[in-house]
Length: 282
Image 1 (cartoon, rainbow, N blue to C red):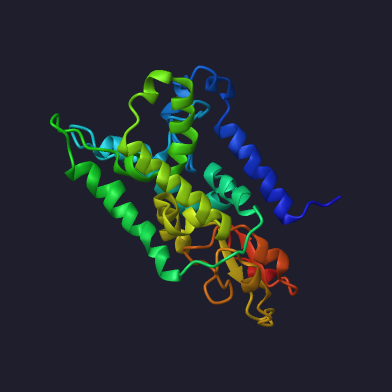
Image 2 (cartoon, rainbow, N blue to C red):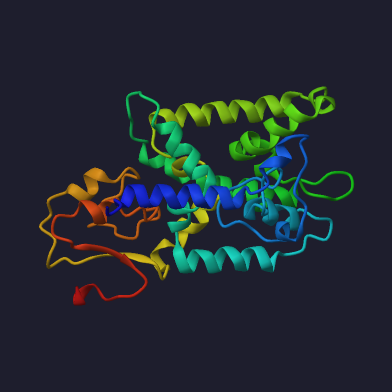
């Protein structure tokens, strides 16, 4: 039996989630994996403080270095993000991101399904600039160390996979809960509610990692192509796209997560996703 694109993508998402969070046993006792693999970044959004996490989060790692006392520029993290983005673009979001999978599962909860106001998609770029790049450098404590502002004030993935499990396992930490954790829980609850009604709400509005990969979508080697000679402008690709992209008009939109649903829906096989410009040969 041939697997549909949706089933194939879901299986890969589940496999990626499992590989990213191999240390399930660490939830008991609230331990963190600190082995050698934690030195490397996961391409998707997955909290370093999640007990099961095998890798570091690239956004957290980027802030940790830029917010250090020496304000070192993280060539490794930036180089990693640029390399992944240039190679794959937002394919990472659509196929490999653990929090992306969680959002899609939440969206299956029965409810009216809505579309986001398109101008709100710019918010993730503001979050990237302000909370990921600027605040860790300009907002420092008495020791001169910057705050990982996105992780500290916003990241719902960190609250879900890191904060809640750690608080559940360590009763002594529960005594320290204050306004900051209440803020993080509010962001998480609003994100969950948003994801119920809007497909990948966090990806569309708030994710700085998606913003980085989105900026590289237009030049990524793995890209979407439309054969205009075959296209009959039926509109089926735009109708099926849950990221609100019209593949014919903007095949490499910053919002496209390369899920492949438009490719599967095209009756004329005019849309392709590949690593090379060979659509004319198809």
